[in-house]
Length: 90
Image (cartoon, rainbow, N blue to C red; front, side, top):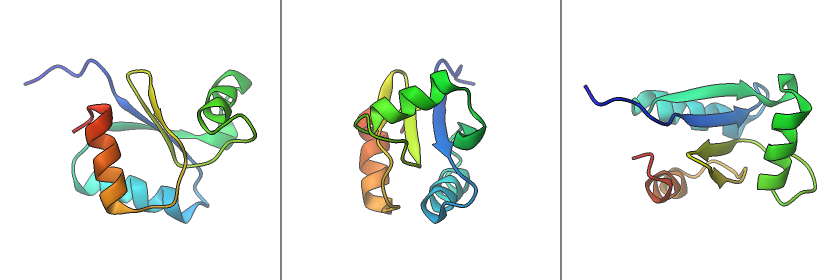
């Protein structure tokens, strides 16, 4: 079994339909990830998510893998796959 050195992190909100679809996609495709409810995170984490989204406010779902960030955006399967490949997740 391949050791997992880095885990995809998903910063999301339960009430966000794009977050729900992203999480469902990851689960269905057996892509391992850690889920973080953005509204329950300490300021240090929230500030990183804000920075990844241009510095104005947090946007979800925001993804992070091995120091690479994907800003929050609407769910689009093709874009998500391309971004996950670019980040080295898949």
